[in-house]
Image (tube, rainbow, N blue to C red; front, side, top):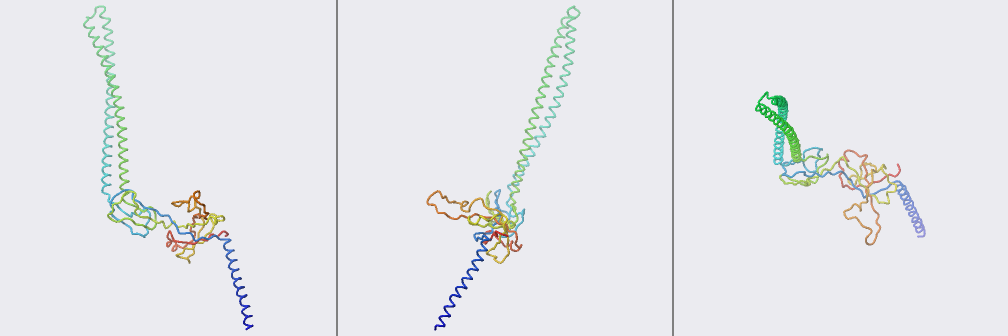
Length: 347
């Protein structure tokens, strides 16, 4: 019995020693690891999600995609009934034609009034010639009537002709001024007509733009999700129809504690472990840091200035770019997947 007790007494210290050694080894490894790495499991896959909304209203005529399928940028995914918008375009084009015809009329009027101006100017010259002749006759008859070479009647007739020529000259001059003003008026009308054409062209462009919105295209390449529309449904402008997840913009958002950020800098290498695919080799690097904490960006941010203050360690979202992963793995990653990241502080 004494021998067995001695053996038992020796086994216990040996087991304790082995446990201490094992604990020391694991503790040393953990110390060495955490002195060179910063880990967090508060992280998830993220990506650019483009919501697609209707820019015009109408009934859904055709749906050209299925949910959770890949589409390419510019693909027509949905068509609305465009009958109303085609009619509006025709109305706008008819208004444009009418405005263009008005410009043609105004240009014709300018040509006509310009011709009238030339005629009025020629009339002035003719009236001036007649006036000069009448003045000379009047002066000559005035000298002759003094010595009785002509009768008073002939002199009165010469004076009447002179006065008539003066009136004709003034009338021709007034007509010329009126013709010049008429040209200015028709030119102003042409400016107004051109403005009308510009306005009608804008109406046509707007109608074409509205018509183009009846074909809803993919704003980016990716996978269609959250389909919220059916054929024959009446949709309104601004209504959300579906979303497109850009599968070429996958990255990781890791929420590190504020006490972990001291040695984390952009460019550091990161090992990424996705919960769904733990055995896949995915590498990344720290890209940038959010300007605010997650709590501060929440719908109801805490206000430490009210009530009793309890200090809580805050978390800062850190964006991590994926630098190495197979195409097959990238194709399987989805925004929202949980991941664990380990930032290497020393290369």
